[in-house]
Amino acid sequence: MANDSHQLAFFPDQVLAATARRLPDKTALVFKDESLSFGALDKQVSSLAVNLRMEGIAPGDRVGVLLPNSIAFALAYYGTQRAGAVTVVLDARLKGKELAGVLRDADLKLLVTHQKLAADARDAMRESKNVPLWIAEGEGVESFERRLQNGGDCTPTARASDDDALILYTSGTTGEPKGVVLTAVNLAQFPRVMAAMHKTNADTIWGCILPMSHISGPIYLNEIVDKGSRMVIFDQFNPVTLLEGIQRHRVTFFHGVPIIFQLLLNLPNLKSYDTSTLELAGMMGTTVPLALMRAFKNAQLHVKVIQGYGLTETSPLITLTEPQVADAKMASIGRAVPGIEVKIVDENGSEAPDGEPGEIVTRGPHVMKGYFRRAPATAERIRGGWFHTGDIGRKDADGYYYHLGRKDDMIITGGLNVYPAEVENMLAEHPAVAEAVVFPINDAKRGHVIGAAVMPRPGQKPAEKELLAFLRSNLASFKVPQKIAIRESLPRNATGKVIRDAKTLLGE
Image (cartoon, rainbow, N blue to C red; front, side, top):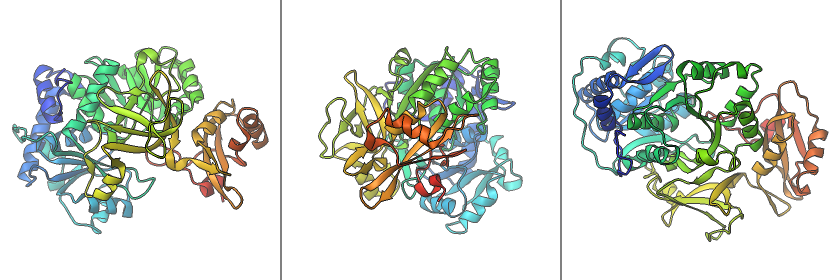
C-alpha cells in the first residue's frame, strides 16, 4: 500500500503523490466517459494547490467544496489538502437560507463550486460574506479548470496529525447542521479498516453512488490513493445507470442506503446485466430491513451482502461485517472495527448485558476532534472520553451488534418502549411491502400510540387491515400500530433516510 495502515495519520495528498510515482499510468478515477490516471491526477492537484497559494490561501484556512459528484470534486479535495487548507465539504443540494447558514458558520476563505450551483452560492453569500468563487465548467477569472494547468509542482505543506483536516456538515435532521471536524488521524481509519477486514487492494474497483459531498466522497478518495485502486463516480442515482456502470467498469464494491437496493430489485430485467465482478454490496446509513437484504442476496447470489454502521463523527465506521460471515450475520451491523472500543450502555451509563438494548457508545482514534466552534455541542456528545451515538443497539454473545434505531425515535406508549426498527422489519417481511417507517402519534391517554406508513412493492396493493392482522400475529399487541398509511413513496432527506413526521406521512 502507498500508506502503512499502522501509521497514526493519513495525509491524502502525500499518499496520492507516492501512489502517482508508483503507478503513474494506472486509472484512478472514472466519471462517465472521462478518466484520470494517478499521474495526471497528481499533476493537476499540484497545479491547483499552487493556484490556491497564489490566491492567498494559507495553511489552516478553510476552503469550501460545493460540488456534485464529479472528478472536479476529487481534484478540489486533494488540491485543498496539498495546499495545507482545511477542506470544508458542503452538501451540493443545499439552497437558500440553509446554504447561507452553513456558509456563515464555516467562515470560508474561498469556495469551489459548479456552474449549475454558482447562482445559489452567490445568493447565499449575501447573508454572510462574499469570498472568491472558483467555478467548475465556469469561464474567465473564476474558472476552476484554468487552475489545473501550468501551476507547477507544489511541495506538500507540513501538518500535524491533530490539525483540522476536513470539515463535513451533518444533515441536520435532528437540528441545526454542525460542522464535524476530522483530523489526519481520523482520515487514516477507513483505509486501515478496509485493509484489515475486507482485504481491499489495488484490484478493488469502487462504485461511488452516494453523494460525494457526504463522508462517502472523502473516504473513497482516501482509500483509492492508499491502495492504488479505482473509483467509478456516478453523478446521480439511477438503477439502470448503476447496473450499466457495474457491467462496463467491472465494479467490485459499492454501498448505499436501502432505497437504492429496493429500486434495483424493482427492475424486471435485473438479471440481464453482467454483475459477475461485484463481490460486496454494503447496506448502510439507517436500520436495514432483513427482508430487503435477503431479497437482494437471492437476486444476486454471487454477491456478499453486508451491513456496517457509523457516523460522520466516527470517520465513519464503528462496526462492520466481514465477508466470510455475511450470510450468518446478515441481520447484524457487524463487530467493532479494529483498534476501537464499543459498548452498549443503559440509561445510567452502565454496560448492558448481551442481548439487552441500550445506547451505542464508542471511543478511539476514529472519533472526531469535535464540532466546529461548538464546544458545548461537542461536550454533549463526548462524555468521559466516550462518544455517544444517540443510536440504540444490542450485542450478541459472538460480539456482533444490531441496530434498533435512534434513541430519539424510540416510542414510549403506555409506559412501554417500542423500537421502530423492530416493527419496520416485521412490516418489511410482508410480501406486499417494499419499505416501511414507524413513528409516534400523540395520544392523550398513552402519551403516544404507534403509526406506520408503507410503500408497496410494484403491482401490490396491500390493505391496512391485512397488514395489521399480519403484525398482530407476529408482534406483541403494544407494538402493533394504531394506523397504517399506504403511500406511493416515502419522504426522504438528502442522504436517502425516511423523514419520520407523522403529519407528512399520514397526509394530515
